[in-house]
Length: 362
Image 1 (cartoon, rainbow, N blue to C red):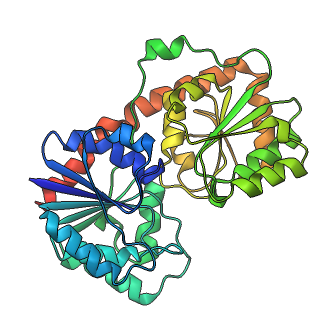
Image 2 (cartoon, rainbow, N blue to C red; image 1 turned 180 degrees about the vertical axis):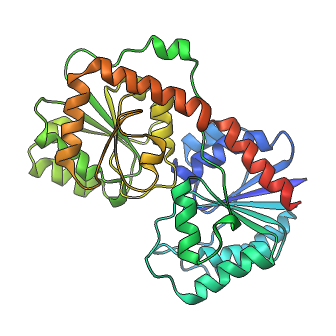
C-alpha cells in the first residue's frame, strides 16, 4: 500500500510537525512518500529521517499548477492520499486548496487534515458547493484537529458537522518522573519563551508590548522565522526593550529551550491546535495564552494555565506577573497541563485516529 502525504512546505510549522510525527508511524504499515512544495529544511530532514521525499513545484506562477499537481501525484500511483493543509481557502501567492483537493479526489481516496480554520466570515457560494460535493460525492474525508477547528470548518462551508471528523493533534510526553525534577523558576531574570513563525497572527507583537506592562524585568525569547521579523525588531527598538528581546531563529532544540523557560507565551490570534502549546504542556511549563480559537480548549484558565483575551498585552503581562509571583501555583497548573496532554493529546492517539480514518476510506 502506498500512502502519499501532501504538505504545502517543510519548515517547522503545524502542518510540518504533523507530517513529521505521523510519517514514521505510517511507514510501518505502508510505503510512504512525502510530497512538498518547498525546499526541505534541515530540521525537517532530521525529523523525517529516512522517509522518502518528493518535490512538487506548484507555487504561484507555475504554468497550469493544478494539472501539474495531478500528473505528479498520478505518477506516484498512490493507494491513498493524506493532504495536510493550513487552510481550505487560498492564501496570497498560493494555489487554491480546493483545486488541489478536487485533483486529489479524482485519483484515489483522500483524507484531508486541516491544521488551521481561520476563515473569512463569508465564503463564495461556489467554494461551499465544491466543499459539499467533495464531502458527499467522493471518497474524501476531512479531519479537524480541535473542536473549534471542526465547528469553524462545518459552519464556514455549510456542511453537517458530522461530515468533519475530529482527531486532536498530539505530542510525545516525557515521563512524569522527569517532569517532577524540573523547576518552575530559574534564578536571575525570568525567561519568557514564544515558539512560532514570525507572522502577524502569531502575535509576537503582543509579547513584546507585554514587557512594557510587567512589574519586573524579563527576557523574551522568540523562536522561529518569518516575514514579520524586521517589523518586530523595529517595534522592540521603538518601545526601548530591544535588550530584552532575543530573536533565536529556527531551532531544533525547542525541548531544551522549553526546559529553561519560566513561562511559555502563546498570544496567537488563530490556531488549529498548536503543537507549540501542546509541547509546552508536555514539558510542564507555566503557560500564558490568548483566548483565541482552540487555545482555551487545550489549556483551561485556572486549571492548566492562564488565559487572557487576544490582543490585550496588558492582561497578558498581568498574568505573567502572577505566574512569577506564585511559583507554587504555577507549578500546580503546569503539572495539570502535563497530565492533560498525557491523556487527551497524545501522539499515539493522533496517529491512531488518522489511521482509522484512512482505513474507513480504503
